[in-house]
Image (cartoon, rainbow, N blue to C red; front, side, top):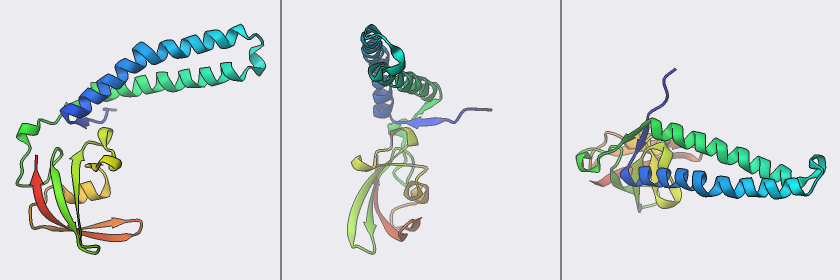
Length: 158
């Protein structure tokens, strides 16, 4: 079974590498120290500090494995090659929400670095998928749980 390709911008790649390095060099040591201290309390069968530290250790190790897998399968988006004629991964798109008469702006990124709070939406999200390949002046309809949203593409840039 082949592993899924992970699309990343240069900034997204740097963030994942930084997180991985922090987990390996800082977080692992902190958790190991917490486990060591919890063990010193004695009876592990009723030791909530030990249980919490072991759970955190499992989370940290799982995240490290996930990040290493993502980085192994990463494909870097060369932002210099992003075509501003159509929406693609790496594009920043200004849209007009027809229903609410508002303009919104989204940066289309791979799913690994999507962050709706920063207007970074995944190319795999309903809105991202609907926008891919569209040009300025296009109108797209996106089905969302609340109904249908209609956007007009106003601008595409890198």
